[in-house]
Length: 228
Image (cartoon, rainbow, N blue to C red; front, top):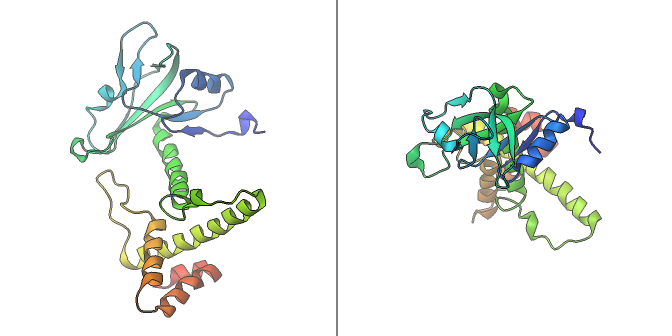
């Protein structure tokens, strides 16, 4: 069990947006920064008019953010509402075809620091993606024994760290991956490293020196990263 006072902040994606759930967090005095869908209704009062969140965010220039004045009422599909502070950032241009806005409902945290807090969650998502569909495909395992699954996850954690080191060194040598319009990299450092290892292992000509060089990162990561 985790005591509420030990929780710095709860970060959640757009699946965790129930007004009742957010109000429960407030009753437990648990701070949160939860992402909202751009069509989520926001109003000044429970009885007054409300507008989709994107209507408040549309005037923002690219890569700028705004904290709406005061508190706003966030309405749920079940008619419930909860009072929160709302932070918005435009993350992509209208022509990009991507979701243009990051909209956060916050409580108990400095709204000016909310987006920086939320960005930490993207690092967790990157790890999940690396272990699953974009990397080692953990979801395809047929293991069912808890002990074997535990050992597998331990092995994958080591493999992830190694691949990340290879990506970091590649970025040090050749420059980081290119960035998209919303300034996030096209490829993570993990993917940068995985592409390098795949090239070494799948090359028609053996590349033992390059592979042994990458393996040295497991023995001494600091020395490995310092080599240019």
